[in-house]
Length: 268
Image (cartoon, rainbow, N blue to C red; front, side, top):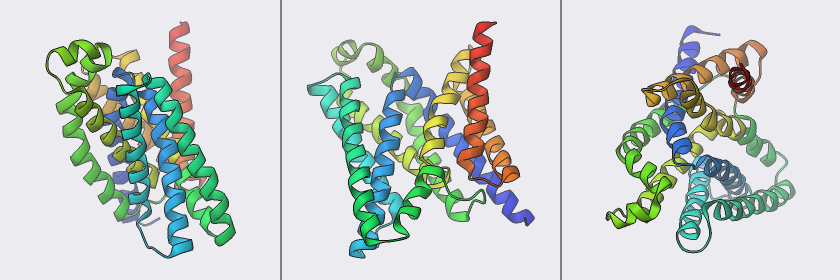
């Protein structure tokens, strides 16, 4: 592989890791890790919907945009339901049910109108090739520049809302606005990551770095989350290239090893 492609691939991997590091710890601390599962389901459904609209109707929408919009709408639904009607767990379960319905329905319709459509949609599950593109890097860096500062800005408020929502409201915090912003940032990060490393690897990565930071570090948790995520992403890409598999495969292997390491460390 040419040196410039290798450099581009690993720069993209590092950027993906940093983006994961920015969102993983807040998801864990604010007790919203299950929300990440909702977003990966929503992104997959949105990607399949986008492919269907392009193949069947010739609309020409960018698939990452469709995936983000569906994830954003479902995240707003979760925020509204958990604010007014149900607990967050129940709201997330309902959103997952809707996302799964979108995925199943439009997968069936897509298979009827296009012989290649499902393979396009599948790239969002397993990820694309182990060679990143300039578009991947630009998209990830743009997301990182937008998401990371905002996450750090609202981090303290989100922790307070997660542990004492009524107390936060009594202090004048607009809990709904913070929840909307946090879920929107999570949706954006998930849709960007799913474009390159796939839905499965995104879900794994969103959970593991934050857990590693909390398990093994007592200070500078954000730094630990960033470093853990970057190492998992870079190492995953290296494994993927060595085994000639998509990045999701390498990241999944390395993340599974990290989870096993946490289990073994707990036992000892």
